[in-house]
Image (tube, rainbow, N blue to C red; front, side, top):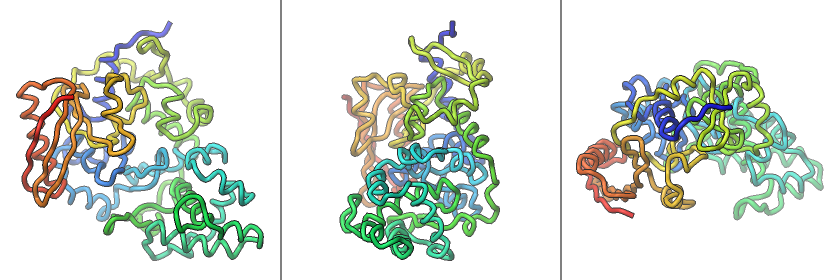
Length: 397
């Protein structure tokens, strides 16, 4: 029989793994980003997530890691979304994320299926055609996705037979004023980021342009076998979100539950089964002792929307189901308040000039000491949002 673990044990273990029990020293920024990557949508959320985990984080420090030392890389990653991670770990978050089959890739970039079927080509073929033109279009340049997609689509059109070219250049279903071929290229670019061909450069205006990885990085990315990269990605997932299941890993990754065997089968001998609230879940065997002895979490944090910690799929573990719609809104998702290991409410910032107004809504009234601690957190966040003063208001659901 699998050993039982309590919800409180799991929460304490995960918070420690996410560096939310005690902040890392300033030189721990890459360690924090490398745990399971840091999602950067909505834009700017990665900076706040790093602040929650590392002391003395500033925009300048993060920019230096991105554009100066280039030790922090951003690409499309899990679930087809933009993530930051250490450049040294690029194989884990690119090769390790990329499914080995065409069908699984289609699910990872869901929405392209009808277009490639109408063209009579596989997604793999569409990616290969895009890859064949990418260096000619992007070499020595920084291009936002719309310009990059238009240039690539135009070049690819010339290589297609007449009937296929007509479909390629027809109005597409993906965006107004965009041809079908341009839409397909947008999906292919996401796959090419996972093949290590291109990545994001720092944002200019309202968009992060693409650059070629081999031109952007001073040191080439290590060539890593897909099996090694996939197994390491799953290890990092389980260290951050364990105990977990195949289905939850699939949802976090962005594929179907039936497509995760190329990851899960690689680690089966490293896993132990536990009973979490009556359901079976798995954890790395080497983490069992840490799971049962994680220190009781203390302190408060203001977590941004889509913080790595709130991206776990067993949401009932950390938030009562009646509050799920408040914490995980489909549109206009708020940040989450973490107090002494519990998600205890939500928060929203609103900036006017140099003043930041933070509205805190809690599931129950907070002690005054926790309210003051949250005000202190907001004071630290204000300069990260370009504000010099902050006003915090409290309310309850």
